[in-house]
Length: 167
Image (cartoon, rainbow, N blue to C red):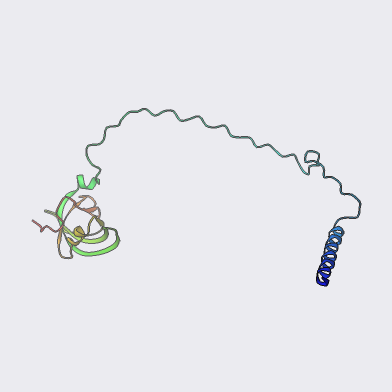
């Protein structure tokens, strides 16, 4: 029973101490004044501008439902249509990048045009499959198309068999 009385005394002292501590934080000027409402509070600086909304743009005019005729010819590089066909000996092959089945390689070719002087050129080509890349080997022959005026414009002819011997 003495323990219970001691505990009660300790709790009373603790509560009284907390109460005094809280009262000492408030100013001794008397009862607290009510804060002025937001509307009557003095403003500092210029009055705030009300943000104006931008007018919504008019909807775009409806597009005519005209179906454009599709180009019957597939999109191919101009050089495949206008280039001069020739055979070229593969001097060097360097695989630069492999992404999935596609291998991008740098080829050095010795182009031998019909009735013209041979020239060497370096090109980049993306082989769509590993089999098409494996068909091109150093010392082998490939079919190319080149620009008669600019011998730096050369590309492999995809319609020709890459490993076919020169005729």
